[in-house]
Structures are given as C-alpha cells and as structure tokens.
Image 1 (spheres, helix red, strand yellow):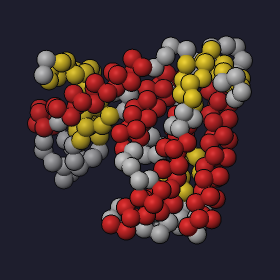
Image 2 (spheres, one colour):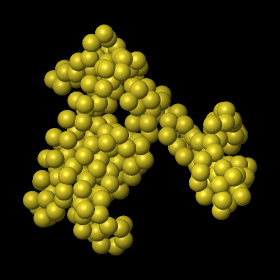
Image 3 (cartoon, one colour):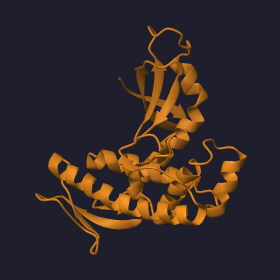
Image 4 (cartoon, one colour):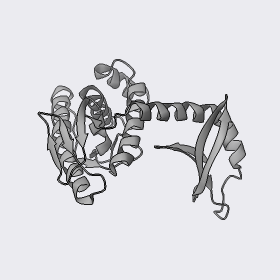
Length: 232
C-alpha cells in the first residue's frame, strides 16, 4: 500500500490511496476510502496503464464518491448507529448488551469479545428477518432455494450460488426492511434467472417497482464507515 495522495478536481482535494495487486485490469475501489488498484508489474499479461491515466479517467467519479463518503461521515452521529432502519443509542462500556425495546447498544469496539458477541446477535436477528422474507416470497412465487447464510461479505449485499443457496452480507443490518426485502427478492429471482437480462427485470418490477440503487448505495457507504468505526 502506497501512502495517501491527493487529486485536485474542480477545486476539491480528493484523497486516495494506491495499491498494487495481482490483477490484470486496473480499477478504482471505494470502501471507506478511495483506492486506485494497479497490477503488479511482474504479473504476466497485465495491461500497462499508469496511475496517472487511471486517475485522469475516473477523476470526476472519484470526486463524486469522495463527497458522498464525506457526507456520510458528517451525518453519522457520535453516539448513535442505524440498525434495521432505526437510530440506536450507542454507549461504550465494559460489558456488551443490546436492548431492542429501548434501542440501546453497549459495545466497546476495542474489545474483541464484545465485537464477536455483537456480530453473533446481528447475524441471529438478520437471519430471522431474511428467513421470513424468503418464506413469504417463496409462498407467493414458488421460489425454490437451498440454505441461507449470513457472511461478512465486503463487495455485495447478496449472492445466489448455482445450487440456489443464498448468501447475504452482514452489512444488511444497516438497512430498513424495504431495502432488505429488495435484496432478498433480487437473490430469489436468481434461483430462476441467473443473469440480469430482460426476464430478470420483469420479475424485479413485480415487488420493486422503483429504483432503489441510490438508497442501497448510500447504505453501503454508511456500512463501510460504520464497520471500520465498530471494528466489525
């Protein structure tokens, strides 16, 4: 990992990092920060594209992503987090506890045991919710699916395997039920349509008549920042 750099775009200094990996095609990655990913020169068959070329090509997009990250950080309260669409009070303490009625969370991110307990409880709650949505849609549309797993996926909300097993990211816990439903339904459609072509979108419109991409994108950015903050 190369140190922090800055790119001036429309009068704004956009911070970014540079990282070399064993990949063939360079790209720009956004998590809780912006990283320009370049191929390692010793890796055979890579495209010889410089950092300057990539940064110039994606400069406007990097500015947009940076402003959204910054906005998400500013909106995040010091002692509150979003859990299933509601704002919970968060306190640091010596003992982990979570109270669904009072919407309070006691968690010290530096305590690995507390963090482990928090993740376990989130997975339990999320699995109950997703199981309910899956059964509801399966009854309505006769979807056939296998196992349901909650994982700490860092690149997508969910996925469907060739065997129709469903995997969902733990990060879904920051979303409200409407958005979680849309992700669940999306993956259930993949049990019958493995791509995102015409038939897939025809099915999607049955339960998700409006475009939720902006809300899902904002939720992902929030989750990236929150997971770093809580050491998840």
